[in-house]
Image (cartoon, rainbow, N blue to C red):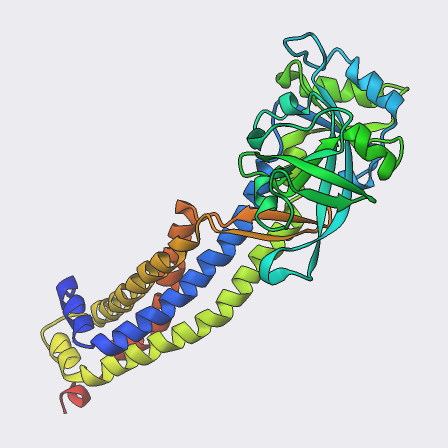
Length: 388
């Protein structure tokens, strides 16, 4: 015979203050848990959106990032002539040889004086077509032969002199900001783009760091990879663009997840002790009730389960509180250093339904752990002693 659930609900309402504080403690832990995982989730999503399954990215053989790569003009020309490269409406190959360098820039506002590494990417004319998720939202793209740049929208919100018409100084020259662009929330929005022929003389000389091109047949990527990597004239590695950028997020994403579990585990200990105290107090004050339940024929296992359910109800309320506290951070833009490229990357906290369910499950685990020993004590309470 099981104890009705309404009994547990009424018991919880009889201790509103202790129940509220216990639920709030669990809710705070759940909010931190969801927030930390949303941080890692947003970082991963930003890099995952950077690449496309339609594009290939070519680096020097052995290079693990664009920063450490180098591709000469002859190699870039051979790649552009490959039959695996798609052509645009004008018949030209959709290939973008790109320069990739880091420059130090001071932050705006309260962070003035702190410096971050920002990606400056020199692009080819076809880059705006190769990257289909790029959209100019203010101004117009840089003109060929001019010292003009276009800045990502998220990067523009963090650094000064990035509005259209303003001037940025780097590489020993002044560069006019002629546009701002979005890139579907990807890491490109944390970069400065300009013509590669303008960037090469002031940075790393006559060499590109990568070549991106649209695949003529995305389903034949493996064939294109084998053909280019086995070409004796080339010394390159060919990556599917989406896979390459997703892999760039693994190290920092994993570290953020580990920190999330470490921090919330420490906080969870306090929340569990709060649940333990609350449930022990409930057992102490309701000893006569427990004795009556046992006298009426309820099995000790039913009493154990009843108190576990009661603790889980408190935890469930705490989980809902934690979810409500965590929801407002969804979409908030923050930034960190991408350890794969040592550059600043801006991204948004990303709270997903999966994270909310994980937070709710974490709350129930805390409630169950906190309620087990008090429930065990209640189930083993001698009837005669309880009645006294």
